[in-house]
Length: 183
Image 1 (cartoon, rainbow, N blue to C red):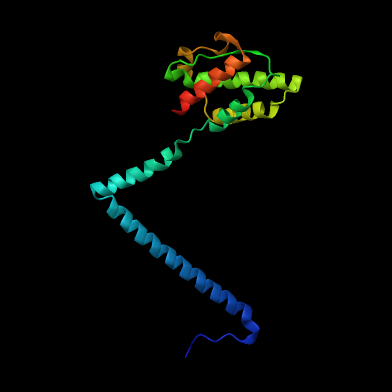
Image 2: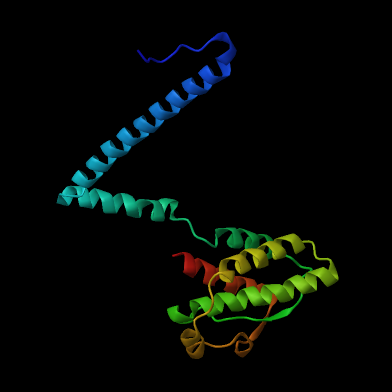
């Protein structure tokens, strides 16, 4: 009669491999049973109005959690540099009351002008060069993946069309635009 032979002392490694395979199979079975359980309860939940309401509320809540703004780090750095006295430049300053459709080009203009400030700071060795760099870097990171829509840019002003203002007024306008964006 054929049967499963017990491993000998010489095959201890094979015995350990067999045990680890059993544990792995048990783990897979447990994961599959958990999947079936969750899957059946999830779809039952979606069959009634209350379940659908709970599902949509749960899907929406993480997006509004703590009212987090994607520009919060930029705003913090702007607060750091706004009192800097060693930055003395004139910058194209976008209007804070532009149409909503022009919001992205306005933000791009502010970040382009931050590059001008960064250049000036590298020449003059400003005390807040790192903060200026952080603002510029964070802005570029947000806009690298999003290409500006050509239909929007036709309706909106180019950066050079805005009035040139001093550094303090530029920062005040930039802060207002970001706060408006975060609402």
